Length: 216
Image 1 (tube, rainbow, N blue to C red):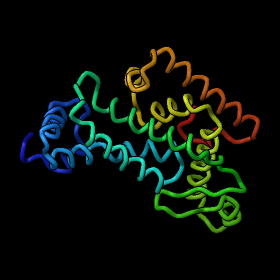
Image 2: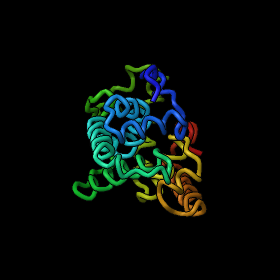
Image 3: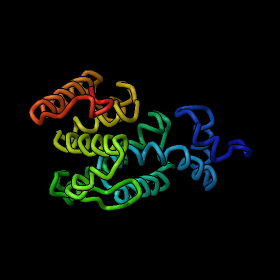
Image 4: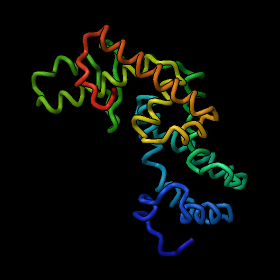
């Protein structure tokens, strides 16, 4: 590992790069700085994925922290056969699934609340009542986030995971297939079915497609 590698360098590091491989080897040798750099590299994308999966910023942060704890405990068993990101996402997904098996969370609706990325609890009814006091741009962004979360929450778990990874994390079909340990064709089928189900729900609800941004 290069001693001059900084936090900024780590955050911009390409997954699977020689620098990342060096960090992993150093971490396996007990280098705490190397582990910190790996955390800096992956904490943001992992949090973004987990937050969209569970819909609660505090819970997502806890799950990300637990993911890295498990990585640290198991790093000596990592053999570089799969990409480090594949291993990391598998741990995070399993933790999310374990959470939902232990405690089923209700889908967000007009009679429910959601937690913002800053940790504030916002009741959807209050958000709707307060619409008139907000700018059009802020309102559109808030409504889009709320609607997408509701649509994703209504999907089967395997479809929701694929959509989050492909549409929001920018992973390739091959990367997703490796993470989920399924054929690429299965990933594509789940993405197609999930997006189709979301479109059908949009049509039934009378929601304008333009309100949902990147969902096609």
